[in-house]
Image 1 (cartoon, chains in turn green, cyan):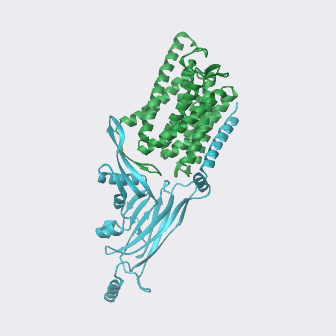
Image 2 (tube, rainbow over the protein chains, first blue to last red):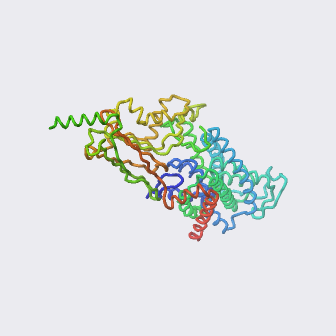
Image 3 (spheres, rainbow over the protein chains, first blue to last red):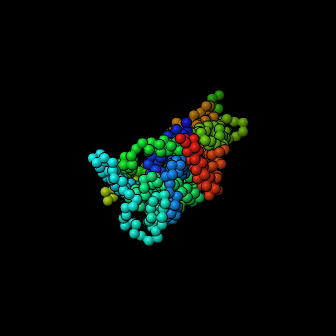
Length: 310
Length: 252
């Protein structure tokens, strides 16, 4: 069954949209990531114009994160205070990111920047995550249960000023690294059209030592808030949010996210991280190949929208 | 008898000069093509009749007909990837300004067999002329880029030349069908019909039709353009509602 998308001005199979929405939603619930880093390339590959894909995915990420965040909220898995500071940093970062986005577009190097950005961020984070997860998997197999890092263990981050007590996370840390992480992920997110959950989760775990019980819920809430702001920005600036496209993806993803969230309870943290690392690395390799291999058709055509240059 | 008729016809021909004295009427089945939520392309039928130059006489043939359909104009860029610093980058490009986003050159016989090449260039814009004329900037081989531009547009079913697309139901009555793909651009389309006899264009007429969204699709398109902030907020609210509803329905 075909459905006509009014902003993309193309006709796409409804089942395909709901289907990929569902698959991405499952991952989103499982890992606490928005799934934008998979969904945006998928949509572009299936013929949706890239500005519409990037902008509409923000709406889908909001929906997927909402159902995910709600199920974590019920289990008490969100640190509201921590999320607030992350979002403040994230909103500032998104503003800067949109500015860089425009700058790159005017230079005509946006495509390259997006490909390289995906490759560098996904490649390095995926590798780090995989190495860490495999190590802890091996350790747990050898020596039984892993010794959990306690929240009380400190690193250099804990020496910074402006400290504040985050009760739910059992942390007493400076707000500077919290806002800094939100800011950086805001920039990366708005540049690459992703929520940034897969970068945020390891950052919270390894840099801030946020306990595993609240890390995914807090990350989902952050992604939700920042993507909601980005969606409104996209709608009012580039007018490329396709609400019908977003809705089809949302319906699939909220269902998928529920199954993902419950499936996540049957997997251990290190197994989850290893799985996510493999997926992230897969996307990075896909981008690496597109940069390295000689394409079948070296020619491509694009419509220049208002203000865009070659 | 037949010699007399021939004489009359010859006289008529002489009288009909200069070219263009022949008349033509044509119409399309859909002056407005509406795009609804299940739109997956459409077909428009064009039909017309070649009219005699003088009232009460018959139009003298044989005729051929060329139909050119042109969609709204947009700027397009064709890029070529090449290896630089070891990675594949978009390097060369060709910019086509105000290139039709939809183009059909349909005729009753292949166009170069029925019209003088000089006349084709003057009066009828072929796909090749179209890309050649709209090319405004290029950093590579212009010929190559023009060929590739046509190929890419043909692959997307936006450009096509068909030399056997128009059929004659009588010596003067013609009809053809124009398929609009699902990715057809929205806007005003122009259809031009040329009547050809003895290698020359003896009549022409143009007419426009519209491709536009209707109903809910139109409402969404208008809202996104005219009320972008409200539209964005509505999208976020819809996302929150969908997410919440999903959470409630699947609560366990």
